[in-house]
Length: 220
Image (cartoon, rainbow, N blue to C red):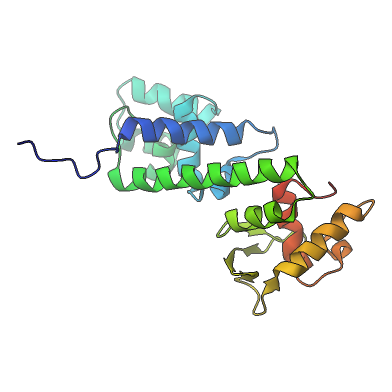
């Protein structure tokens, strides 16, 4: 009897294709989306973000074109490093992934990254379709747990965890309650214009402001 596969649903090509599709979708969502945005959105390095987009054929620079031409000419990575004056890691990031060569552990992480991205995307869509539904607001807040945010003014990095009806932000000792989130959200929706975090006028506004921006509901 054949030995059963440990992961019967595991298909490296499908996982890679799906991850590339999600990466490209996000990257092409707006001209303002940068490599750093892609890296942050999917919790990957800047070098991996570049390599994935190059693999998908939607990103190129003079350096990537030159490096790929040198590789096609038979140059080794060491020779390319010497010629370009870049690190080995940088050179590799300018070359597309080869078909059939996948890191099993990394693919497993990529599958989870895709799952989280799609979960967040769906939560955002649902909230935008029914912005007055406060349950959907909290669903979206929960979907962005551990997402890498930055404060609008100082650009300070932060993430949060949701426990019950509270948001615990890693840069803040005191939690932000669900009722505070709802209050800030309702103030935002009722205001004629919200230009900065202080305009929300609630506790934790400097953190809620970038969250609302990411949810696409600021000023909605």
